Image (tube, rainbow, N blue to C red):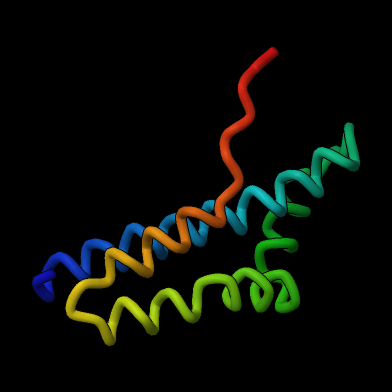
Amino acid sequence: MTQAEKKRLSAVLHATEYLFLENIALKLVLEHRAVPNWQKLVDHLLADKEILGGVRLTYRDLYREIEGSSDPSAALEAFLGKIPAQKKPQ
């Protein structure tokens, strides 16, 4: 894998990490239905150090392995295998 490919892959993972974090925050908002200032609550949750730390731990080892590997596809495959399968609508 070239350096440019590693950078692209890393960018995808960073985006995925942010979306995962945002999703956690939005689920918490949904638990508090009819909250008038929901956007403020989402912003607050996205700035929460504990939530950020937990999500960061999930991705830290993967980033390290991609940066240090000539072929990080195995690390990515292992990571993707841990992601729960999408639930099918009933």
